[in-house]
Amino acid sequence: MPEPTETPSLPALIGDTLKRQVFAVQDYSLMALQGLVNVFTPPQYWGDTIDQMNLIGVNSLPIVAIASLFIGGVLVLQTASQFQRFGETALTGDAVSIALVRELGPAITALLVAGRNASGIASELGSMVVTEQVDAMRALGTDPLRKLVTPRIIAMVTMLPLLVAVADFVGLVGGFIVAFFTLRLGAVQFWTRAVDALEFGDLVQGLTKPLVFAFIIATIGCYQGLRVKGGTQGVGRATTSAVVISSVLVLVADFFLAKLLLYMFRK
Image 1 (cartoon, rainbow, N blue to C red):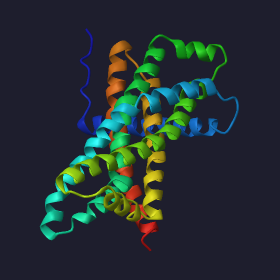
Image 2: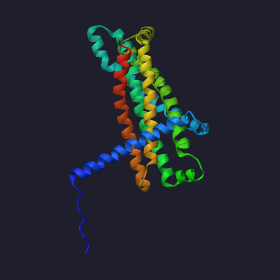
Image 3: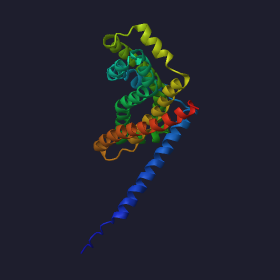
Image 4: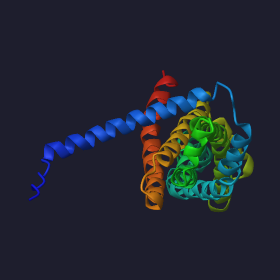
């Protein structure tokens, strides 16, 4: 007669969960570090890198531009009443410019790219794992990290700052359009104030954050895709996890980067 299985206690369940999370962080860190090291060592798969640049950068451009256009317009709509109340409508360009370059441009663009590309990376690599294409690469002597992960890291780190620059400009255009029709601000007045409001530290913040966000999005998408288990259902779970985890980590990293960069340039 088979013996009844013993139900694990609550502390044991919590301990097992914590151990799995620690091992997951360790595996992710090793994969991300190896993918970063491969950037500086041969061989390089530049053809794959260019393909990923097209998928990540060019194909993401329409959604980033449309979202940024309306974000800039919303910024003006939300601040217009306060500027009119105090008779300082000329400050509209300053507010939109600083908000977009420092914070909204990098953060919103990173979230949009994470939603579109982290899921795509996870599903693509997960499908390759399920169909044993990754095992075939290893059998043929090809390093899957160098072939699959490194080109995506290079492409993401290269294209996300460019997408953020486009988002900042398009957001300013959207803000100017709304300011012109609601506050009757002229083009010279708006754009002069918007450009003059920016300092060197603002530009550094706007260009440093996308580099970190891009690394997070690419590595999380690759990690979730390469650890897929359970067939097609596992691919779906990996896709969802890639978007959620990368988005949350982007927001967490944004907080600490903002704190650090503000401290560096406000001494």
